[in-house]
Length: 441
Ligand code: SF4
Image (cartoon, rainbow, N blue to C red; front, side):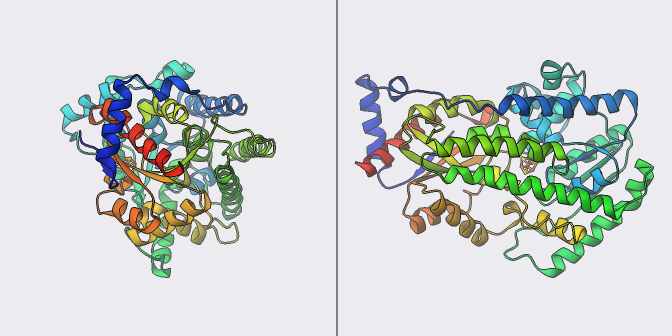
């Protein structure tokens, strides 16, 4: 596994770093290695548990129909039609975070799913064929809820369509989806009108499966709740601009759970009000997420789910806070508008970072980097997710030159830890932070 540090002083820093290691200097031992726990976490755990237990009840009792939805699929429409909505990407991230994924991916590979495609897909299908799920240990749930309908949006990638197609064949249930224009600079009216037609075309199928008639007023209500949720989530993330920051990227990857699976429901709105209040209190009383915050990093790309805890501890030990990220921002949807639900849903699903071309992405990152007083950028090149890996077409070099900031590319993966060399990653991150240290000296 190779790592690329995009900076002129990299070699010299690596040598310095090795000398320090040989002479016994160890940053990790000299500093606190934990970020401060967030009190709202216990509430979040409860509402996430209620979400999964509600789905399990629906599965067992057949009271409500279950729709599977991709992370930025038309969840608003599904809630409005009375479905219980399940997000397999969230389940796949749990497989990664619990480190079950690496053992399960080969089962999907053996079926014919390449090790090079999305490791969310391969981990999730692997877990299904092996009959295991992290939901069992977390909530006593035996298996994931079987879908009555599968609904995707290709705004993020084609893999979600193929992922859902597996289950559609397996269970002989309808598969419907939206095909979004991708790699676009500006969002044009024809993108929106096309998507609105595609969303509306799904309604007859959803009416048949759910047994409910489409209700425009109910859709407005759900879109209004999604709007409130997304505004609060944005405010939560923007707390990271404070110096010192009251939360870390690693906190945010956990606390984004309700924004992912409960978007459009009042529980998410209530939760983010609670979390925001706590973070504002931290800012008011100057309580940092990590002790002695010295450097502030922007993280682009997917989390490495199975190494979240280790990376969080390493950055804290280096007095470095990852204060902003592309990934957590992916659940900010400014466009939602209950006055025009279909158009605003189409716009919200298309305005996403992942849908856009590099010129848009670079301008977007520049805004956040300036606003969050960032002094270094890390790109995670996830082996099995080219869609969330922005380091493959020279963006790190362009951002380094434009922002005059050190940039590091870490090769790894979201779920498949066979693609991640921990030793090399740790060494490169430490050397990267040493470079930041030299800048402030
Ligand atoms: S965007 Fe990447 S991680 Fe997400 S489903 Fe697609 S390939 Fe997988």
